[in-house]
Image (cartoon, rainbow, N blue to C red):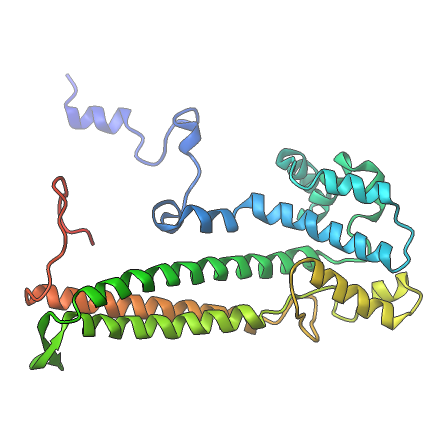
Length: 306
């Protein structure tokens, strides 16, 4: 008779699982999204947001091109407007497999539901027209959400600071007892950091440029060809598209992609918010260790909330 250890060795595949087991759970999900991301932020970075924005960018480009004199009909634009949200992802994957190009996969999937517009979808554009501009639009929407969340946090902390403005507590320097302060006063230190973060987020939002209509290498050569070398029309095309997509500014120059300094600036702001939260939570943890504050503990909670 086999032992349980032998049965385990012969019957249990420790390296994987059958392909028909738990089919809906066989795709890796990042814990930062699955456990910690809000529904709103997940939606901003979702495929639905990304690829419907691609279609809006194609519509904005075609609309501006028509306004500036290219032979694009109202019927073509009507079809594009009518199919902004019915993205057939399976069809796009099918075309991508055929053309080995993700953007062309979605161009042709869009063209299937808007056949009149197929000849003018993506007219003059390069892949980064939809890719990079969509990234910036998602960054903008993400920053707007972060700013709203900062306002909500500051409102909660304001009420807490007001409530405990007169409650004395021991203040520390170098984690050594120093002088009396109040719980409310201590809270204002956390608020000040988050307010500085709010101001930085607001600055980035006010100054965030769109990539715009720049062409394959940033020279706008394809658009100059479309408009017979009319530089003023190409400048207007860029301005019109950026305006339609909700931007007051566009980057002055680019290669195929927008400068990644923009990404750095936004990551820097997000890092600052994380530092402020870390400082606040670190203070609370140290104070809890000294029994100056206590962590809330739910009736059915097991272990620390951390």
